[in-house]
Image (cartoon, helix red, strand yellow):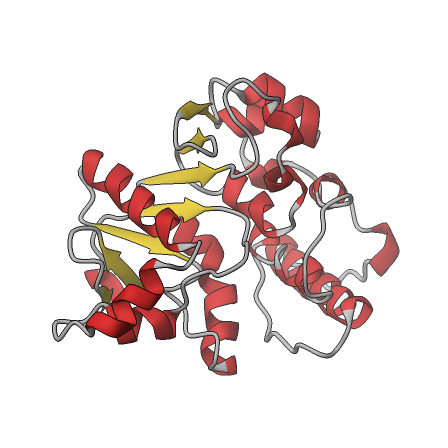
Length: 256
């Protein structure tokens, strides 16, 4: 797992149980996000001035700076950001990262949910963040989620905003506050939370749900949304059989 040092902005890799406490950033992607390659070129011990200047001019760089500031304030030396802690040029690493993402968010000390399209005086619930596929697990998985508006002003936490978030997402308040375990919700109910959400790549509408159902599978971009979703359902069925200790067959369209 790679993490950003919140003081130096260097990306550091940790293996196995050696991962230190870390914060995590949840956000919707925009133009000019800073990539893993950018970080490798621009923020090393032998700082490349030209490269770092180019990176700092990218629109997404401010999210790295601001989230690092929040993490330092909260006592975290490291933070994880999905735009630049994964080498997306490697298909094998991308597949591994997608299968690990749920645990990354679950292992964080705090998740900062940055809503780039709302301000404190505007309606929080109009944010694009609540319509994206990947942010569903980012909302549910961390132990603590804190929302920030476009100016990085704190709006509230998942807990004290639970009633409002439940109204928009249809996720029970008890799940948002931690009073009800995610596993206690039926498969159909969890599927319904993603029904109106969108992803940029067609297959991601299935891949983004793997963690929520506790399954994993290889990512095969190009297979299409239907095939990806069928594979997801097959993995859910296999997982359910394992937990039930049965060989019962479940029709794909009637899992509940």
